[in-house]
Image 1: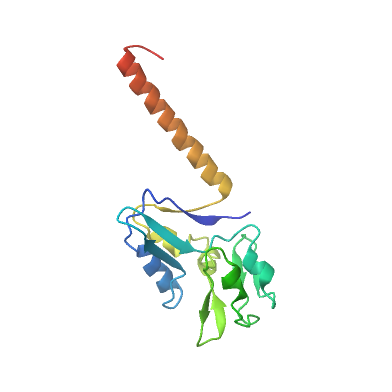
Image 2: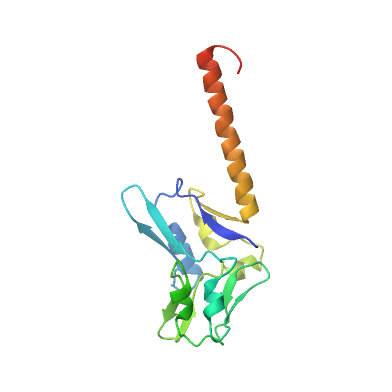
Amino acid sequence: MGKRVFIDFRNCIGCRSCEIACAREHHGKANITLIETSELLMMSFNCRHCENAPCMLVCPARALYRDEDGAVRIKYQECIGCMFCSVACPFGTPEFVPELKIMVKCDLCSHRRDEDKLPACVTTCPTDALIFASEEEILQIKVKQNLAKVEELAKKVEKIMGGTV
């Protein structure tokens, strides 16, 4: 599985710079949406580029495909705008564009990836809440974070107990 955009909600401040950057890259249409569910909680609706993407499975035109980097993309010239992909998507991210009569969704800024650049939402995020990585890389980050927490806790216990643990 390729890289995807992961969101660390502990770092998200709800500034919406990711939405603005996405809209800038995609002719005014943001393919990521932040929803404030409470004063303390933000949720994002963006394509997760699922391993077993239900949107790909239900498309009668076979317009959805996975590119060489693992991103689920749409062949716009083959899309019939039936909206099956949006119904099947657990996040509801593919959207119908009435003027074009096709569906659109996040493509992980394929034009930027072609130039070895990160997706615009990731580079624009001021708090590094968005991370472009593989699942393996995210697991490695989480293991390092957890080890750091264990080391910090051990130091606190050592300080309280007055010796080494």
